[in-house]
Amino acid sequence: MSDKDVYQELGEMVDREDIVGIKVTPAFIRLLKLQFTKSEAELALKIGLTGAPLSELAEKLDMDRDKLFKKLWKMADKGTMWIDPGKKDDPVCRVLGVAAPGLIETGIWGGIRFSYDVELGKAIHEVTREWAKEKLCTLGFPFAPVWAHPWAMPDDAPPEENIAAFLKDRSYFSVSFCPCRLSHWLSDPGDHCEHMLETCLHTGDTARWVVEHKQGREITYEDAIELLKKCNADGLVHTININGFICNCCSDCCPMFIGLHEFKTKTFVPSNYMPTVDEDECNACGKCEKACPVNAIEVEDAAEVALDTCIGCGVCVTTCPTKSISFIRRPEQVEMDTA
Image (cartoon, rainbow, N blue to C red; front, side):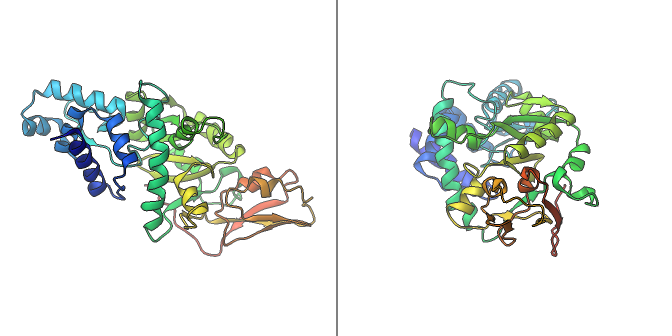
């Protein structure tokens, strides 16, 4: 089997077994060749995205258990293999899919660590755009829930809608570099996104896996809350709660925003809050219009919000210098998945 056949087959496996899938393009093949050696690709094909306990894999592959674990641990360090964190006796091991967490993220969550990471970042940037267009924008429904910024929400907001309250119940936290943003930096230096980089917030087992494999650093709950504040001040949107991690997305690089802005697809599920403007207090400074990540605000005599476009992130509320914008509940409510 040629190298090309191995990587083509691996790409097809990821596309087939991942919940969303990914188109097997030249850019994705390049990503796989950077992330997997040929022997690692062959091993990944035998393990799959479902995987199995280490003891079962060793028996199935007719390999010494300790030698196999060493190989898989090295792959996990590179961001291609999930090994159940903290369960070294007989952990479930599986190949990572596309995202949350997956191959378009984990290779550079920890920054530039390996000799191939600059080229990997460039491949990730291209693949992310392809994935947004070919997969996310063809799902046929909005899929990315938005968390309203906690300090923009009204006092009577229920705790299940408050990301700060959700995080308080979690047991472990880590933060990594945003792969969408970092890959943009590496692909287009000098003309890249200027938002802050260290913004991927992980909790629970995902956070433990990240720290074990040096793809991020452990932080405290207090650090996580401070990160949310900094991200909001930087105009980022709190989104997603999948497998224990929260995205803080910019409108420049995030695949959900690429889908929204470039491919005109509604990718976000708005929060249960929407802004209201006190026209008597608004001084028409335009800061909210500039900050809005979905271009839902126009300012003439006062700010006007297109509520059918607004995703309820709260960036405008905290940006307003006169505090003339506040959040009220939307007429139609969305249940937040905090599992």
